[in-house]
Image (cartoon, rainbow, N blue to C red; front, top):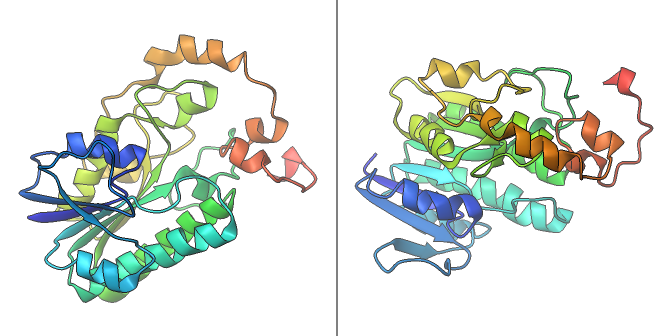
Length: 270
């Protein structure tokens, strides 16, 4: 990779990656709908709205790889999800195809499979079970990635990001936490691994309580350095102070599952 474009530069993950990817590739282009407040003048930044296909096509010219973080990062109204996460995601993949970009790393989410119960360990071959409109958009992005990989020859990696933070802060996050350094490692595998064509990885560190089988990532050399259990005592202490959430505490998606939930809760059916 000579030139790498990162969308969503102003978001929480994009902000950390601006430091963690600095100097890794010869040229990095950062983009978002608005400029980050802490952006240094030395950074290559291009303001663009991913919902505008013409703007994204221009953004992708001369790019070898894309890390697509842009879009809504939490549950929103359907109109907002549709514009940023559905149309915007399509525009990124289509602009990549038109500009002959080699690779796309798509920031998917654990919320694409949030309605699996916590008692069940799942792999990336399980059907999607989105827990929200946001989760639906991430499942759509994964399907779009498969289409562009197998029909158009893009090399695509979808990372189902868990909880991106310096440390897990409650019981659920002990199972789904990923450190900034480990997510950076997965992104670099997606951009650089010579044998990768199309894969889905779980974005998780070394989590003893994990609900996910991340064999696909390990197969490509992923070796997480973050260890969730180092933070277990404080996380479980915090958990005791949280209000009970029978639906969210049952499913992997947590409060994304219980929010707006109006289906009769039957644990035996999950």
